[in-house]
Image 1 (cartoon, rainbow, N blue to C red):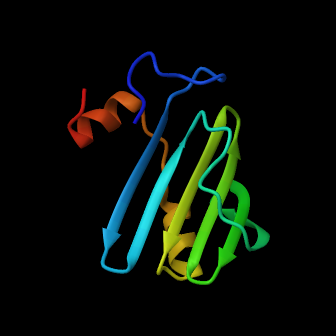
Image 2: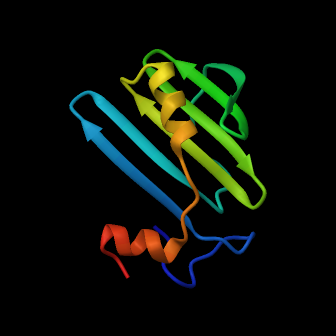
Length: 107
């Protein structure tokens, strides 16, 4: 997670949260990123909640990328099916970076 003063061109920091459960992996990240985790494969447009994005699939790996007003939001998964990843994407809610840091125990 970007610390205070670590911002990119859009004036934002960045974050990446990774969760593992055996062969299943989920990484959620975003902020001032020019590129997200590189994944090539089949691409199609999707909508999750009010966000439009791109779903990229190759084998059991999937990535959803949303271009936001001031950065990007991405969800990368291995071992999760498309419906699970879409449910996760629909459930995401904005959070203030200070609140997020407090939740994960960094200040």
